[in-house]
Image (tube, rainbow, N blue to C red; front, side):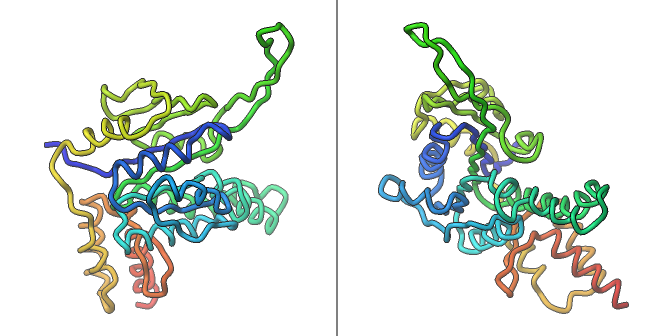
Length: 287
């Protein structure tokens, strides 16, 4: 029997394509309580009069651990839908994955690029796990790499046009999301990856509540699944033994909950699987 799962929606497009507006339109139609993680220095607040959402303090430093912590806070507060605008910042902006790789390579030799990726990759993977393991819907926007092309206009004169290329982020990250849509300057969304035939290949001009209802119909199919809040609560109990942690990890894996964002008592965030593994390693080291 099919089981329900929260939506994982990724929208990419060049600047001005309307990805943030569309993400908010979908989020407020799909979910009841919407939180926004803004990595665009507060630009999402321009839509506060159009949509109802709670916005976290805007970010200017976009490291993976900050996104994990913010997702953990959203999960702790019970938001059923989170919008991340823009996810690209956690690779390409200050503190992002690529900057951290650059710093790590400078600490080593001139040929330390691969070892730098070995150092940073676990944090990138944990960030993606937290996004995909969130106990609610996640809608993220990604900006496209741009190229300027010259094309003749109606009068035959050369006119410059912006063309969106590959999304800015990890290569192939679109394969981790259920529904992937690309947008252009006409605010038209083309679904390039979808979980069902009704949505696959869909072309939707200015997508909003009507398009969201089609997504909602797909999300509502199947048997409801409870988020792993019981496992998260158990993982935070003090004095768990190594054997108890091993049993807990097995149950977490059976429920595919390793990526569930977990807020620690220190108000820092991690994932459920990473927290259990860390505690187990500490116990093994101290024994």
